[in-house]
Every structure is written in C-alpha cells, then in structure tokens.
Image (cartoon, rainbow, N blue to C red; front, side, top):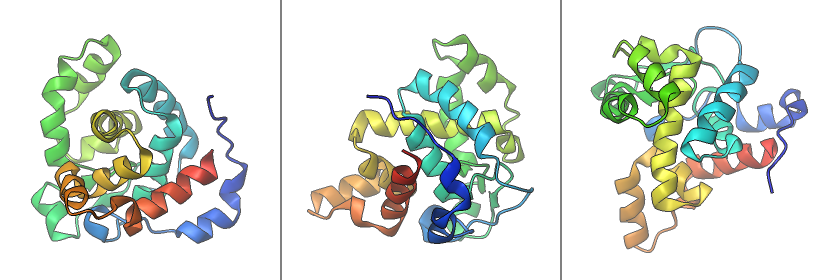
Length: 193
C-alpha cells in the first residue's frame, strides 16, 4: 500500500524534535546554508527518482530531512572525513567521492532521464547543490543500499556509516538500526508517512 505524503506536520513538533541542524555523515552537524527548506521541490524529485530506482519517496524525504533539514544548499565541509571525500553537498549530503563513483553508472543507466541528468553534472561538489542532481545521486545510492539491506533502518544506517560499516555491525551481532542517525531517520520517516 502506497503511503500518502502529508506536509502539514512540518510546522509542528517534529521540526523541533528533529532539530534545525541535521546530523551529517560521521555524526557531525552539517552547515546549513542557502536559504529555506525546500521540501516541496525535494518531494517532486523524490517521486521522480524514487520511481526509477525503486526507493519509496518517504525514505528519500526522511534522509533529506536528517541530512540537511530539506535545504538543497547545505554544505558540510567541516568534518575531516567529509573534507577528505570532497565535502558533503546538497539536500542529500552526497559526498563528492560518492557522486564521482556513482556518475559512470548513472551516465550509462538504461533510463534516458537518468543519463541526461547525470551527464549534466559538472563533477564538482557545488554542482550537487542542484535539487534534481543532489536527489538523483542520493536516491541512486539509496537504491543500491535498498537492494542489499531492503529495510529502511538498515538502509539509513548504511547511508550514514557506509554499507561496510553496517555489514561489520551485523557480523558482530550489533543492530545498526539503534545508532542515533538511524533512529532520527526512522522518526522522520514515520512523521512523513
């Protein structure tokens, strides 16, 4: 059964509960820049790219909420890990190294919209501040993680810690869904659904 996305809750308690600053990769806080949240624009892109990559729109929106507070202009150039990977950019906080790794397969994708959008990316971090491109790359990554882990809590943890980090936790009989990032992402997803 498809979930109906309802944005009425945004002005309410969930914004305060989840906070104005989003947890960035590695648990650090992302620097939120470039104006107001644009959840409507992100929703349009989440529906478009989510349908292609098999990722529910509420999953994409929850990750974007936690990563950037729905701010396409968010940049995280403060944590050492992010700087090493070229910074984290846009509403989905995709690192430049992740986008660079995904770009060849997206440019060769079977879907013409994906190919065209990926071909338009200039290969820079600031290029990921474009709402459509940022959500495309973030959704492509979520699609890969969903194919491996299938469950939102595990996918969210892998989006934050990497698939290898989640595999290690599972091998050590630890539940990745209990990490702060995954808990925050699940709360965001439940509020959206």
